[in-house]
Length: 419
Length: 113
Image (cartoon, rainbow over all chains, first blue to last red; front, side):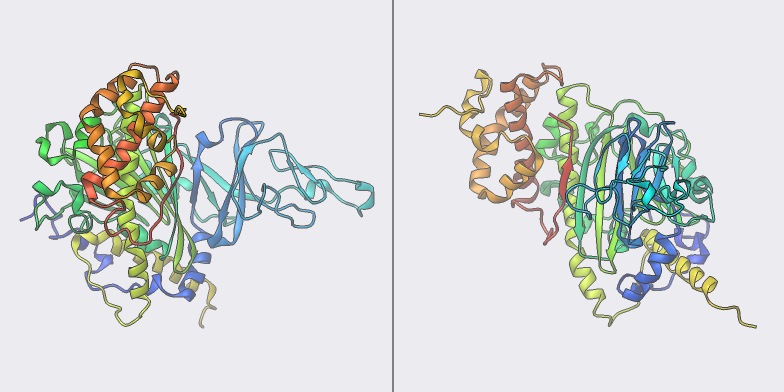
């Protein structure tokens, strides 16, 4: 028998009957045609997280975001009114990319009073209005009010900046996030501003890497080194305490052990000396626990991992969190962005604890990433197309289903109505 | 004889011979050093540093985070390298994480120091 009770239906998966229990296809992760549809149906319609408000500390602070899946680039900027806005990164005059430094395809950040196009010197203020045109008398009835920067829908939830490339999003950001995610409305992300940032260019479909972080079934096998070899159990298993699905979003919670209560042989020497390690610093500042943080009431609670459709994941431990984003760059490649966020260290020892947690994150994420090339290549044989998923993998099943659902809905809307 | 520009606090002078190679302020430098150094040499650094690892942390922890003197800062960077090398020695037994294949993850931002 498992350690954690399952829903009355007998399994987490059957608790959500729309998921089914049969084998699933991964053609959604190998097909160039499906990827072209995902670009339109998902990445040009869903709310996409591009950053945190702390990344735009002052009036005039900006960053650009390359969104390959939408073949576009966006400027995100804090205006004179301190509102954060987003614009397509294009000069309205001749179409030059407006904001870039040395190479137009590289993301940039900084602070400015206005945006000036490198090409003919047109200028735009921080709110996107066209404020200066060189030799305006040479133009023909140019109404500068009509040539401001083209806006992108932009909204903020609990300090996370989201954009939506649909000019008329079908949901507000709050509606899109839904009750399971907005139950974190009062979670104090703004206190955890000490960041360790990572980036990777991975050779798999974006969903295949997301899958690695939404099931723990692989942990005893792939990450056997997370337990010192002397106490490693050859047939170790892993069972999650709680799974939950709400619309296109999903979460999983697992129990956590209080590290300082463990016998020393269950930890590596570096963990004992630094009092930090795999699950972060052993002790973190007392941090408000939102109602939505542990909806399954897991005790002792360890982590809840929120996967916000399509490509955002926030993994919250007590007093620190990790954030992952998966940005597709083709049907079988993606850019992975990640960071660890801590309460700012007050002492050198706390900084060392953060360093350990950030080193360990990379070690084990590299093992996950190491599986990608082989998985993608084998899926692309296209000889096997029915993959059995177990109950611990319910969220893998859900992500792929939602991606297909969004694509099919998009196709239905575009196909002519049959009479 | 040239004197290392990466001096450590006198109480930790025995580690001076590791200073030039391992007092590295950034993770990309430490990662690269770990991957390009043979395991026996990693072991030598690890084995030498281990008995005083805790003491080194305590020494650095006496200073405010925004005002760590240069020699203690070098020691802190040596501690960071010890953490990096510990992964190879204690966890994997190889420089590179087991089964990480051709994966690369770059750390592109971190607090200082």
